[in-house]
Image (cartoon, rainbow, N blue to C red; front, top):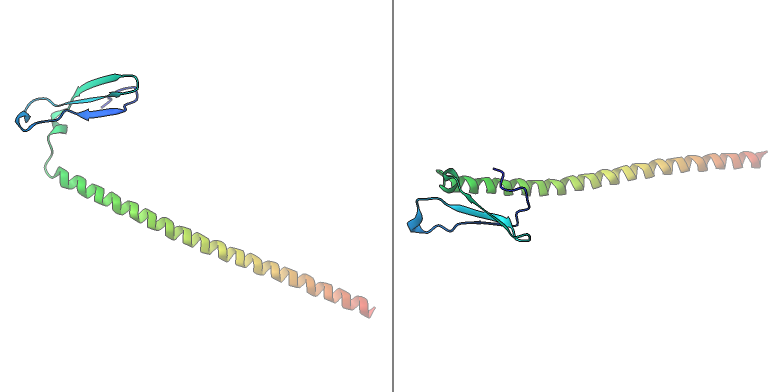
Length: 118
């Protein structure tokens, strides 16, 4: 349903009293900044609750909360795994660099011994 092509900053439904069960229900929407106001009739299928609608919506939101909590927990787990992997890579690089440096030191020592023996 296309309500408006402009920004909607105000949205309100007509308050229904117990003695007004039948009849149309209106909703008002518009932009308070430029003073536009539109009224639209709310269709019957949207103003009359469906069977188990409230419990279905409650279940939907409960499931969404569970999903959001799972995503939060998973992000923490993934961050920890990434940090562990980064540390392992840094450790591996440090070991390789130390081996290279040791190899260079050993080579320098051999050269020094050869020079001294010469």
